[in-house]
Image (tube, rainbow, N blue to C red; front, side, top):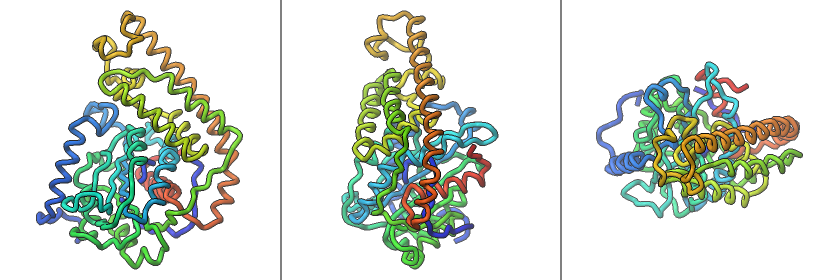
Length: 407
């Protein structure tokens, strides 16, 4: 077990986002049963991942799963603001990650809790997105979050996240909960000690991020919750504006992040909605500052940004669909008159164009990271911690313990 010292740490590089080990007591609040059903219903709709995966592939491929549990009570607008703007920076931390030479699949889930606009019968808790690699959906939902009131049941939301999300069964995969908030960890009908120890018994590490001064977080059991689940405890200032260091490469990276959209080919019943979501999240991130658009563009230039659920290029590359199996009505208008060979050539061409854009973005980002390294070192001396730096720091250390390397 380990507890991090407070101090600002920023990596050059997601998703937010929360007894002895034994089976949970059978005497759980009825809200847990309702939440399990809700989570199952969401995943039944096919929203758990943007691309299907065979059981064999799923078992072999390394996976990093992160659940962000964000307090959306009335005082947490600053926390939600940091999560909205820093999702892409967090995701980018995993671009160089490898285990045994393999690139891991990154999945992010999002819960909100402590919002009095949510049903009391469900503990003022809502599953926003299940574990998914559809990062645009996570971003979309983050921008839709609002704050209201405050009944923050930390133990209950941890229990629900640990019980209902589609966590990997492999002990070698990284499974993390990050819970952030500012009220005592002890509130609600579920004992946080029971919830945290039950989570770690399943291999799910619980990290706690208290929004306030460190001593208050320790006094109100946030540190204890992390210790019980082999996690880390940090305190942050949720109202601090996250610093961005401008670099000469920023404008070109952002431009390429927009150009790459032209290589996507929507297909099937989710095609148009997926493409519209992509554009909407570009606009959302742009509204929060140029630096955040650069981080999103870097994500789009990496293998972590996949959209097999609606994009034909990713779907064909991932083996999710075969062009010869698609009906004309599943294709965009421009492809319908084409022969199979013409469609294959068109998809291959778009894939090559995207790969070229991605290589350019990666090259520019390498140059950018070198440029900002010295500046980020200066910022580290300020002593301020923010959501992104806290999540990045913990993820790196805990991923290394699972054999992941960052080259």
